[in-house]
Image (cartoon, rainbow over all chains, first blue to last red; front, side, top):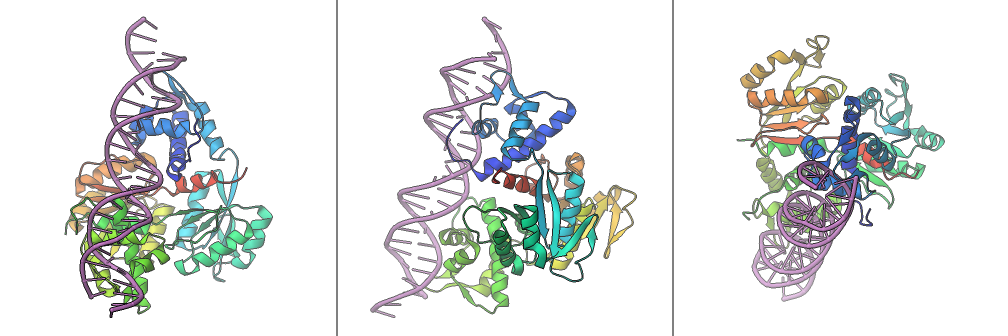
Length: 207
Length: 207
DNA sequence: TAGATTGTTAATCGATTAACAATC
DNA sequence: TAGATTGTTAATCGATTAACAATC
């Protein structure tokens, strides 16, 4: 257990570890060493041990980590031992797909409200989820005490949307708009930019 | 112009710069300084200049960068001055959404073939795109000389799919499956793991 | 010219990894 | 016990940023 600052990279890896531990649990495997993590996930075993050590001494020397209890520890660290309601803004193709995807996963972070500004979409349903007008966004977020939002609006609307989300009390945003959001202290943003990822692949192609 | 190795991070930023330059072009703006990039993109101006300097002396001291010519330079570096055919494997919710999204963008990297292993999906269309059986994947890739693939299959099928893609000649993969792919030298992979991004946001929430 | 901005070096910062004593 | 593996330190590696001479 250390007092060093914990990096975003460490937190994201915790989520990756958690998913791996879930598959181990399902396979009935009870122990895993940091080298098992390295082999399966491609993350250096010292890195794995270091990531865990920020939060506690979870392992047993000579033995490794107990799958069940490590799973619970990480789940608790990430707050994923409870349901976390999430809202999504922008019910376009991508946003709609993320809703379906989220339903399939049965994730503890569940999309419970969807908003769009288009009268053509408002009132439609994504399975059981009703698409609501953005005008109701702030009141619904406050009512449901939603702290996490997913932004899938066009780039031009992203900052405005984010500002309103913050004003409603949102503390964390997963941003799919290709725009860097300017956020106040204490609000977390994760940008997902798979278009940039795709384009960066083109660099390596032979001409 | 330097001989230092160019990082993946630099390449991804080039794609971000390119998108910014496109908006400048559309606004009719002809010059931009590295500080303009910093202000809009939140990337340190020294970083911006360094990224460019790997590839040439594109700027003019005291003036900045010419938007049009810098756009063309980066486009050429990334091979995005030509159409690049892309295939997608796994026509589930996410894969289907990526197809629609790609069509809307009119991207130079265009999804031209879609494959799925489910008889329920094969034969269906995503707009003009016919979903083909995975059995035809290798031959179609070879015929169309496709070098880039997007994997949106379930985790359990991802490595097998990737192996077959490589055998067909694919050189670069955008991987949405939550599995680290083991790839031979010379094949590029970009992993997109927005579930891990979402879960990492939960860490910062107050309990 | 004076002001602005590049390209580049050197310094800093942070993240990854090797190594190993402790110990199960 | 002997072998395995942790937790942690120190070394390494790489990426970011400050600073500034060059020069438009």
